[in-house]
Image (cartoon, rainbow, N blue to C red; front, side):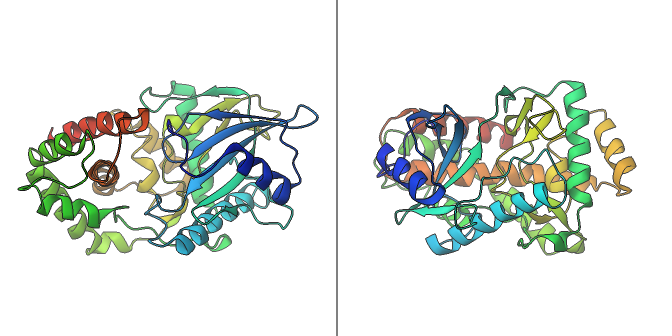
Length: 335
């Protein structure tokens, strides 16, 4: 996240690390990276480094609608990542370092949660830049390995094609004919932009509903990462990655779902990646489900950005990013 979390000071992070993990934070550097969490690079007393993540429990709608529900879902996701790496040999999973009480994530005040990860020196991918062919092949093999793990090995919910903030998006669509009350610099521009795309957005929501109520949605599920895009991939030295050159990060979206929840992100026009996946797993790929999950991603992003820009806000790097991302998402949906 480009903006720092409201109500969280660096001394709060340092105290949480000392109390929960027994770590002495000699230096904390805020890292304005990623799009869903707040991050610090922490240097310890003996120059060891950690990557610390703070999550806003009011901003993870796919995990729940209350802070206790979101925290419970986040803890289940991080626990699953630990098990996948430690018990099932998936060395490409960047799992959190358990705290002294064994938990993978701890509360930080009433609104936030904190987790600690190993610091990886490597080359991170970028969301807007496709992976090179060899890296894409490796990522497909990683997903195949993940999908082969017995879903009963983890305690995770089944994730459908619902949106993080569908109620907010539907409220915005109902109120397109009158000014929104957020009062921020991007509130009215966001309303005008959504008004121009209301038809495709409503049709997209109907398409998700029809698919969710049909037989395809009841297909067998696998353990899915949820967001295996290039921005969640880091290439590190094989020895540090536990035998894998690529590491897959950001496991807060891990859930049980059809494999297409992951596969649409690695599919190219050639179809080679999907054929390779079928060779590795024996699972055919549902082309319709691929497109539905692609649509679901765009509508989910839309629900998040509309929610943010309808609310009171100021012009910050974070809200400027939300506005730019909203423009991009609307363009995708109206093509």
